[in-house]
Structure formats: C-alpha cells, structure tokens
Image (cartoon, rainbow, N blue to C red; front, side):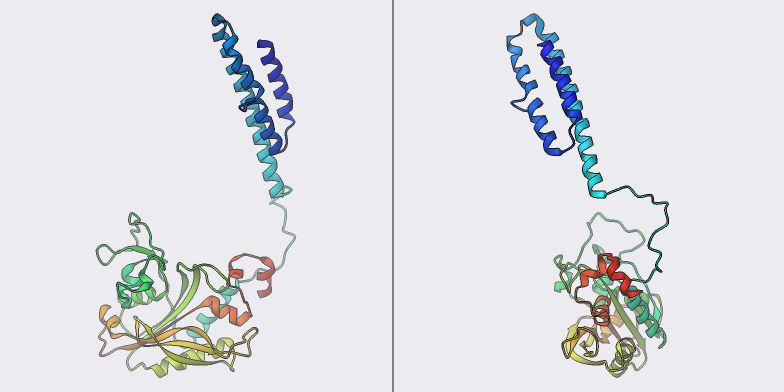
Length: 347
C-alpha cells in the first residue's frame, strides 16, 4: 500500500499541475478524493492491514491526502486566476496617457440643475442644502403629513435601523426614526427654523423612495424645490414664477396650467402641467411636471412664523423629468449607467 500511495501522489502531482479549467478540476477531484476516488479506495483497505501496521499506514494515508488536497487547492487557485484574467482582459498600464483626450463635460442632470439654479438666482432665490439622512420630524411631521399617510409607510420610505446613530442630525421628538429623505422639502423646514422671513430659497438634491426601477421610475432620483415667504404672497405670484422658469428653460412656446390637488404641506395645492410640443419626443398636449401650492398656515405656526402676517408658496419637481423633456430622453435609467456614448452627447 505504501508503494501505491507514492505512485498515487506522483500521478496526482503531474495531472493536477496541468489542469487549467474548472470542469477538469472537478473531474480530477472526484477521481482522487471523491466517494469513489482512488485515495478513498486505498483508505477503505485499512481494514485488511495488520493491526500493528495500522498507525504507520494511517499516518501515510493522511500525509498523502494532505499533499493531494494541497495540489487541488493550487489547481483551484490557478483556475480562478485564469477565469478572472479572462473576464478582465489584458493588463493595462494605468500610468500611460489616456488615448481619449476629449474635453470633459458635466452630467446632463448637473447641467439641468445648474441652469435651474441660474434662472432662479436671477429673481432673487438663494441655493440651500440639507442632509440626505433625515428624521421623521423634518421629513413628515413639520410638513403637516398625517401619521397614517401612505408616504410614511415602510413600503414607500427607506427607514434606517433603530440602532443607527447620526449625532450630527438631532432628533426633535422622542422615538422618531431616521430615514433617507423622500423630498427636499426638509431643507425648507430647516431654513425656516434658522431664520425669519422674508425667505427665498431653491433646494436641489438627491432623494430616495421605494420605487421599482423602470423607464420612468427610480428608487434614487433628484428633486428641485423652491420656497418663497413674504408678506402678501399670492397664487398669482406662484404661477408667474413657474411661467418664467419654464419659458426660460424650455423656450417661449412653453405653457403651464394648474390642476387642484392635495398636499399636506400646502393649501390650496395644485399639480403643475406643462405644454411643450416644440420639444423632441413630446407627443402629449400636457405633461405633469410637479406639485405646488400656498404654504399651509399650520406649517408656519410649527416653525414659529405668524401665519397672519406671512404667506408663501412652495413647489417642487424632478430634475430627471425635466432633463428627459429637454433632451428627448425616454428612459430614466440611462442617467445612471455611466455610458460614455450617452454622456458625450452633452459636451
């Protein structure tokens, strides 16, 4: 048996050293250490070995098994390395200059965001920012969102574990949870809590909702919201600003209209429709583009503003939808795929 073990080790070393594919490796593994393998067959012969020779023979068998398994491990490492190399392709010297020396450009979403901010700065709006991780107070409670509103359900909102701790984001009410903000309206609440009116801000940023990704929806997208608080602000002021924004961004032939709606944050509230048949791939007379309304007095009272003195409006819209209208893009997923063929079109 000792001679058989020596021959088996030599045979395994030669065969396993030449293996380059996973099917070959699996076949060899079965041949040597599988239930019907050659080494397994030798181990089964231990019953026929004289009792006094069994300790020495058992030691030899174990040593042989360790060597064969080690050869199998080496063969597996070579196969795995070859598989990775086949996927990655030939090696690249990253210190060489890039063959593509074309000028860089801003992402289309960034271009739309910056253009919207530029348009709004011209009429006195300042850009405001806030954290993407929020608490229920800033995202829901302060915006007059009822406790049983569907937007607060875990099927719509990404809540963070109860054990999560964000020391830089303080909780205002006991027991409230952390979450990924579902809109940038939380920035408006933070801004109002920091200072007194008049306020005129625009808050672009990334938001999160539990949407199934398809051509028109994404769980992670971008919004732009505006807030204007002053004396004697009316719906007429809101409509005039929206007309100014969309004609500046999309062209003078663009029209807007309001449809009554409900938002907890505003009263009265409206859906904003857009007519822009002059743009590419717009085949409908009216397209829903966002929501707006006059800030509810309850919201003002909650942040310490006298609702009998101050009035204001707020509106919001998705940057992806604006970019899709402006550039004739019909699938929201193309914004996030980092395809240079797509991105170079916006240079």
